[in-house]
Image 1 (cartoon, one colour):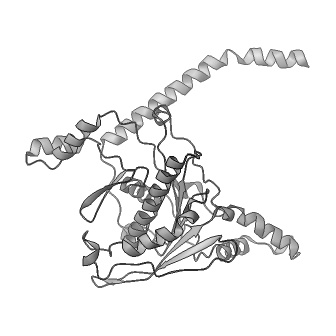
Image 2 (cartoon, helix red, strand yellow):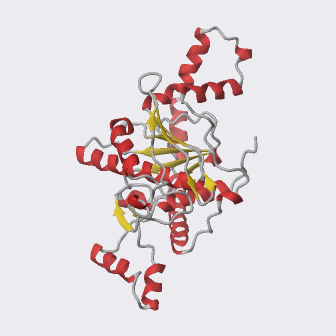
Image 3 (cartoon, rainbow, N blue to C red):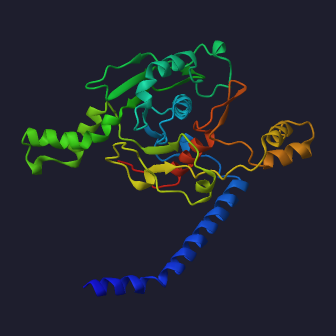
Length: 339
């Protein structure tokens, strides 16, 4: 038997160069595809009215790194808060009624009070309105209350009331902040079924879905789950093909693989900062040719900058508009549930 195992290993050795060559070929083709997608215009984003069914619940996993350095944690916490505020604003503009956010590390729970204050101080713009200063938004959406959790602060719900804008009444938006302990919700429900001695034949999928929604305070199951990394990968990792999505413990009890979206890792930026600043200025130049050339270059890192109320805010690691638009295009391009 030992000789047979050794013979199998020796027989597999000639295949290693072929596998290595296939891996290099796959990496190069992935780089070419990502470069092509970067230099070409994406498909136009469909409007919510063109969807087969309006999106009711958007789930977001904001994945921090495994680093425990204080500087890194502070930067990721800042990116996390900014990402939540942007998601709330974009979801409100689309008429989404429910958003759940999860980071798997407890950063959301550590900054929740500050996040609520930020939502009160910087409310999202009403649908159809132009960017304006907060003082000029009398009908802006504001966070009104925070629900008390049922146990161990597993779920906190921030209620954002409806508002009236341009003859359209928006729906109330619920922002659910899920704690890391919610990753065990299915296991906890299974233990409760055993404790109550519920017969196996009486446990149906609809029953489990309903109980999970009750525990997490959700009105609807997630229609789409967006995964966003709060820290960019290293230079060499950014060149490799996109890794498989990791949910970091989000209770994905009813999600299909087509309902999970992770934006492709952006290619490393090789433009020096001084030249990058000049190219950004060229985008608003009075010379049409210079402006056209500058705008044709993918200069802006979608994960770092966002124009809000007429001014540019740079938050490294925050979710950018390209991530959101990519998720909405993915949602419109797959077969959607009608039930």
